[in-house]
Amino acid sequence: MTDGRKLKLGIPKGSLQDATIALFERAGWRIFANGRSYFPTIDDAEIECMLIRAQEMARYVEHGALDAGLTGNDWVLENDSDVERVTSLTYSKQSRTPVKWVLAVPEDSPYQRPEDLAGKIIATELVEFTKRYFASKHIPVKVEFSWGATEVKPPTLADGIVEVTETGSSLRANRLRIIETLMESETQLIANKSAFSDAWKREKIGNISLMLNAAMAAQDRVGLMLNVSKRDVAEVLNVLPALNSPTVSQLSDSEWVAVNTILEEREVRDVIPRLKAAGATGIVEYPLSKVVL
Image (cartoon, rainbow, N blue to C red):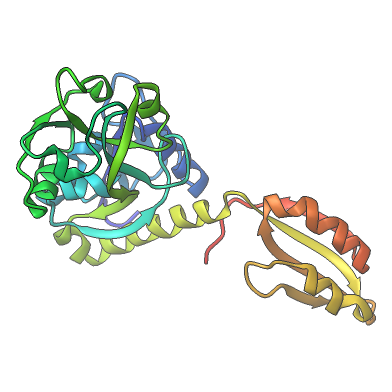
C-alpha cells in the first residue's frame, strides 16, 4: 500500500461488464460485483471500482470523477473527450474482434450509398458522431437519438440507422443491409490527463495495462516443452511456429537439449505429430495465464 492512495477505476456496466471482470481475473485482480451496488469490491487496496455505463465513461474520466476506466473508442469519440488513451484491448461482449458502427437501411429500399439519404431521418444512439460524419460529407440528414431496439425503426420510424454490430446477425434478422461502415471500435483503457501526470497513478495505470494485455496475449496460446537430441534439433526447430525464438537449454546429457516455446493452441494438433516425427520426445503442452510481449 502506498500512503493510503487509491486509483478510482471505472468498470463498464452493461454488455461489457462480465467480459471486463473476467479479463481482470485473468490478469490477477478479482472484482466482486453485487447486482444492486455500483461500487464493486476488488482484492487490491490501492484501487476503488465504480460501475459506469460505457457511454458515459469517457466524460467522467475527462472531468476527473474517475482516474481511469474502460470503454469503447466509439464512446470516446461520441463524447469528444480529451483523455489519455493508455492501451487498446480488443474484446467485446461476444468476441475478441472490434465492433463496427454501420449505416444500414431496409433490404428493399432504394438507398445504395450515404448520399441517397439526404433529407432523411437516421436513428442512432451515436448521435454526435453520426452528425459529424454526415456533416463531413455535406449530406443533410436529421439524426434522432434511439433509446434502443434501433433495428426495428426502419422504414416506419426512420429511413436508416447507424448501429453497432459484431456479426451483423441482428441486422440481417431485421431485414437490414449495410451500405457503409462508419468506424471500427475496440475497448480502451483511458485515463484522466491530470491523473496520468501523477507519478504514482501513472505507474498503477501502467501496471494494470501491462497485466490486462498479458492476460489477453495468453488467450488461445499454450506453452510447449520437449526434449530432442542435438542431431535432430534443427529439424525440430524448423517445425515450430514460435511466438519468438524458442528457448533451447542444455540437458545433463550433453547430446540432448530441452526446447520451450509458445504457440497458438489451434496449431498444436498439427505441430505435435510433426515434432514427434522430427525426433522430439517428452512433449508437454501446458496452459498459459499471461504472456508479456
